[in-house]
Structures are given as structure tokens and as C-alpha cells.
Image (tube, rainbow, N blue to C red; front, side):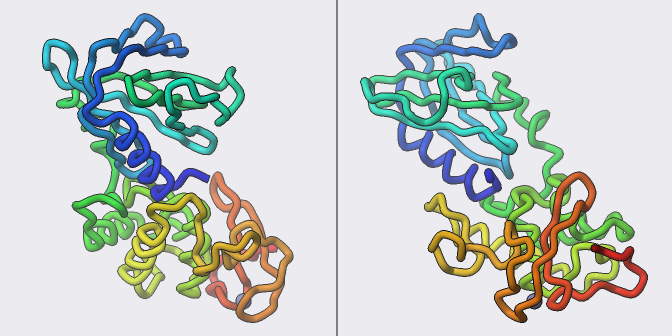
Length: 269
Ligand SMILES: [Zn+2]
């Protein structure tokens, strides 16, 4: 599942493959960019902001542009050597191909693909809260933004990219387990929001540079999470069956014993 760390890794792959390269061809397979041709453009750098990817380019007239993409649940970028077989995903999922002398970057099932002046990046990512993996990560600001709506459940608030950018459903579930907080707890009733966001930042940072997302420290299949994806399996701490239920627009996983609910929270089955 693409969360902040996956997007960070993807940005690094693209940076290594394309930074400083002059593109020898491009092929956009989305209507809004169907006539765009980036041949002769130079890739300056690739960066991530929360779950957004920003490929910064210089046009032949030296103007700075940004190719924006979002992976959502299912998008991916792959870099291939010239002539290498593209084995990442089925071809009908390809949304863009960028060719350079040293590498070919292929974007699969990308969302929100757009080419905008770099000076206007804020229009795409300016609404985001502090980026957990950004150079300007600011835990206090993230806590302030989370606290702006104290009635909302912490399970929903952690996924709000306007509060903090980079947490997806997996890290949400795992962080709440590790802190012993029920996902249904109102934000205003969470005793240590700073500890929560600091742990989220540490978990994402620990998974930079690898594609396996682990919150347990184990990279073995089936052992990488405490609660996420483990419905009805025994809690690794107390043995109670892990539960799964809708929360807002997403499902959540939790241990009812390690993450006790407040008396005023709705009953969870
Ligand atoms: Zn438990």
C-alpha cells in the first residue's frame, strides 16, 4: 500500500534514474496530457511531499515545470534500463513513459497526473500538513492541526493529509496499537498526541529505503504488522483476536484489549 515511505522510495528511484538527464522521448496516455511532448526537457530532481510525487523539469527555454502524480492505492512508477522488458504491471495500466539515454521511467495507474509551473506547486500540495518524511517535518504543527477538530476520531484524523502528510491506513492502525489508543477515541481525548505523531514519523522513517513496510521490526512475511491485515488472528501481545471494522471511509484493525475504548465511544463489533 503506497504510504509516505513508499512514495519517498519511489521519488528516490526516479531521481536516481532520471536526475540531470535530458529526455529523449515521452508518451503520455492520459487525455489531459495526450499532446504533451517532453523531448529535450531536462529532469532536475524528483521529490515527494506526503503521498504526492513531484518530478521537477526544465523546459528547453529553461522554464521550470513539475510533473505531478499521486499513487493513491494502486499506482506505481518503475525505472528500467533501455531495452529491458517492462514487467512492472500490465501495459494497459501505463499512464506515462519518460525516456532518457540511461533509463526509461514508466508510470502505472497514476492519478492526478498534471504538468504545472514549479512556482505553482503549492496549488497541488500547499494544503498538506507537515510531511512526516520532509526536511521541514514539524511535530508541533501536526499536533496543532490534528487538534483543530477534537470531536473527530483519531483513526480518521491520522489519515487527513491536511493534518499531517504521509500516514496511510497501515501506519494509522499500527501506530494506534503501539500507543494503546482505540481508533474510535476522539482526538481531544488522546492524552499524548505528540507521542503519537512522533512514533508515526519514526515508523515511516525506519522503512525508507526498502519496500517492505514493517512496524514490528521483522521483515518476514506475515510478521510485519501488529494488527493491520490480521483480522481474527491473535494479538501479538495479549492473544485476543484482532478486530476489523469500518471507520469513516476506511477499515481499521485493532486489539480490543490492548486498545481499550472509552465508555462513551460507540460499541464496536
Ligand atoms: Zn492485544
